[in-house]
Amino acid sequence: MPGGPAQVDGRLKVGDKITAVAQGPAEFVDVREMRLDKVVEMIRGKKGTRVRLLAIPSDATDPSRRKNVELVRDEIKLKDQEARADIIIRKDENGEPIKLGWLTLPSFYADMDKHQKSTTRDVLALLKRLKKENIAGLVVDLRRNGGGSLEEALSLTGLFLKSGPIVQTKDYNGYVRISSDPDNGIAYNGPLVVLTSRQSASASEIFAAALQDYGRAVIVGDKNTFGKGTVQTILPISRFASLLGSHSDEDGALKLTIQKFYRVAGGSTQLHGVASDIILPSLSDLPEFGESALKNALPYDEVTKAKYTKWSDTHSLFIDQLRRRAEDRVKNDPEFHYVMEDMDRLRHKIDENRISLNEDVRKKEIADDKLRKETRSKERLARNQEEPRIYRVTLDTVDKPNLQLVMYPGKLAEAKKNGVAPKVDPEAAPDADSDLTGSGAGSNGDNNKEPAIDPERDEALNILADLVDFSRGPKTASANHQAPTSPQ
Image (tube, rainbow, N blue to C red):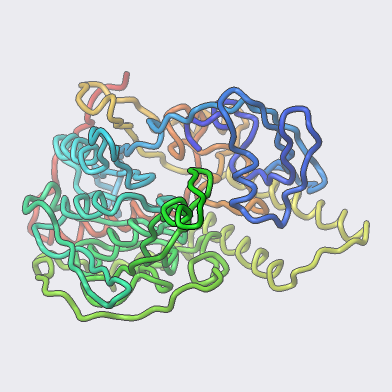
């Protein structure tokens, strides 16, 4: 988690597999096959106390390797999980410069007590800066957004729509309620792509589903999002324990499912999630990951379609043309070839569900994994890529004249000249058996020094550039593509 002790310490990497947890100097407790919430409960604790984690490094070719990481528990500042944006200057299919916006949204957060923190207010500030810089189109990245505040999901969706219903909810008694855009204004009306994954859940699915039903945005990513279409509430047991002669805050609580979410088109987001208009190969796109894989998941159903007016027909999304172009690029992209190879290997491992105890077989598997990673690293060093110019916009810099330059033409070449292969963004390819070798630039903040490879990100930008091109039509002149500012 950005801003947490593990991320600040730096020794624990995304993709590492935690196999055991120890409290201070106590013995390690094996957590393999343990429920995730139990493991989290063991890792969390009071500020200032120590916890030790035994982990398999993500870059280990030998799965018998372990590293011992001792961390001091501390409060996690949520500032690093705020919305942020990038201004990306690159070339389109015709070789002409184009300026695109990228909005990263880790969650739908809100300060419930002080009402000072709001996803919608933060995104609105970022959008104003992006519009000031004359972006031609925008990508909203929800790949790792597990949800959050329903109110923020409604108001944020309203930034991209003029007005109308956003989501429907049905109570246990069958009563259906329609929640609408709280603001009739619109903050951004340009070409829009929403990038999702199996990790996009709950409020993210409400946002993506509404924009898809209205025909407002092109949904790109995994086949489906997570499929969490239910609402829970916490019921303290102490409210009822007093009837039995006991009343304590330590009595615990029950989490009850009280409602289900439905799209304005009538279908539930439960189980089915939101299907992508354009599917990209991804290691996270597994049927074993999602609401449908959980025990006792509620079924999919539908309610009556809400009354809403689709986005103007003049803003056609050109889905078929965009899909054909994307499919052609994916077929010829070596990084997507790597992803598909890893998907096949992962699928085989899951289906086989066994591991050899034969030493010679294990040694060969380790040697093959090492050779594959080394081969890919050499191929990346030999590959010629043209890097875009990327400026980072945060809530701290949104009003400043100068923005941080996080990528520029020649940065990748500099890294290659020094013998450093481009790194794969581990959050873009979360399988620890793929060739993850380090942190990716642009994945988790501003401190990444090495260029990162994220084929989904790059293809989402390609799709957006195509959408911009189609939307302009043959008679529209190209926009001004001046760089936003000089770097700090």
